[in-house]
Image (cartoon, rainbow, N blue to C red; front, side, top):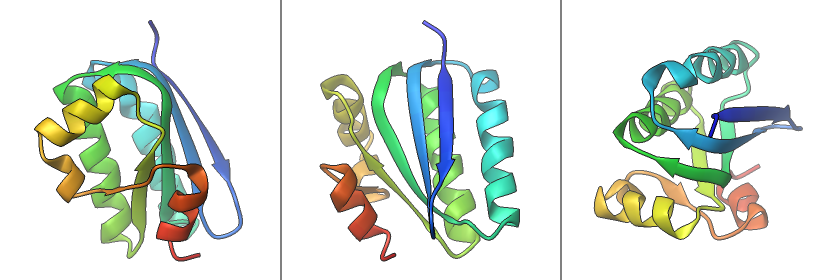
Length: 115
């Protein structure tokens, strides 16, 4: 399955929807570049909707960490939500749930961004 993403810029934040399988570093190159562009546009608060993400491995985890680092370095935040059981278990096993803000819904993710 192919990895795809969609970024929708909202008032004060961006909603980033990930779908497919994120298993190679090169798959996320465009995503990272476009998120870098968001930073230059002073949009540094991101909701990462993982509801369409079927599977990811260490490359996917690295991509999420890179996104979080970009947002926080720019004074913003990244919140994860919508994870399926496989992805959620991976986030918990790797203890990334202690690094990321994790929301149970889109509404909660918006609140966690303090918009």
